[in-house]
Image (cartoon, rainbow, N blue to C red):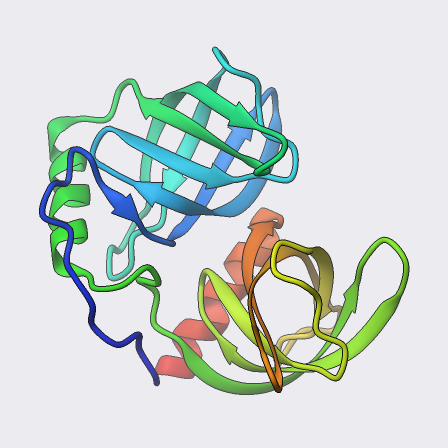
Length: 210
């Protein structure tokens, strides 16, 4: 298992900091498994292919690493940007214990990527609006993946992916955004998926780590 090198820890949990953790939200009945851009004990900023509108109350679950269960709460959208494909929501009914868990988590992590990563070798199919290309996932976490490919996309590009996890008959489908480009491929952050995808990914990573 590989982890992110240490940088600086969050000293002010109320203001928070850029951090990437899995986030599930429900807006007008639509369920999306995505990831965060920023997190504090008061708000979360979430990547979203179609951000919910300002003023909408959404259901949110935060999957903090090493927590047995996600933190569930409601949150009021106070900023939404189709240009950035993200929204910010303020927690409305998160108990003090939940806010304390977030604060403790933020003070314990270093760097933006909080989720442990594992080395894998999984074929993947990636599609954009115009074409499809093959690649190999070499690094995987609950919030993203690194794909070796001869056709890397630009940072900010949105892609649809299909990957078959070991033990699955059918491929899992998801949406991701390119956040890093290297000579050998690109890093993707998960921005859209189903509950089934989150369940299978979580199970695979847990068994891989066992």
